[in-house]
Length: 187
Image (cartoon, rainbow, N blue to C red; front, side, top):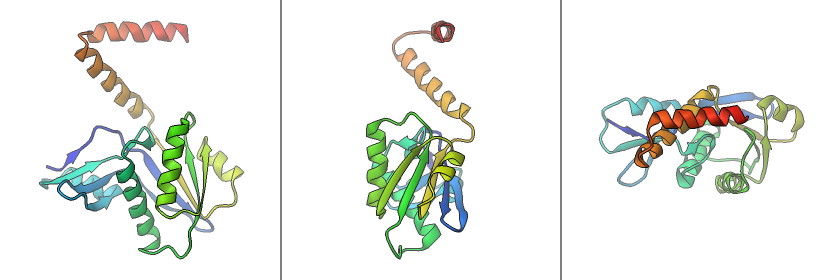
């Protein structure tokens, strides 16, 4: 069976100026483990994850909407743009990337670099809701929204990581629950 990593995929929406939304899929990429060749992105990669295919790995190169695997993220975004425009961009676009708030400078730089590497002329990163981004930023060729329509899945992903770490440190789940309640009381 094709392997899939544990990161919860983000929802990727791509809008083109004057056309509106032209793409909406998960941040998934399928590739061969032997040579790293990209086989599919989005829905096609998701379908491959459930099939018995040796040597194929399906991952989300984004972790909670931010780049976790740079090379795979660049490849994923390039493949997504190829689905929209074909193999050639007629000109280098101004890309606006709309993400949730709380991005670090390092995450922002990785995202900008990935967009430039895939052919962008100019990059604008907007933190906040997609609706705000569309209202505030009028001058763009491509708008990419990276979000999660079910944010509880991100929380679940983090809790699994916390419980794994706690188990490695010999801390029982009941104690982790106590710690969470203590933190909740302080908020």
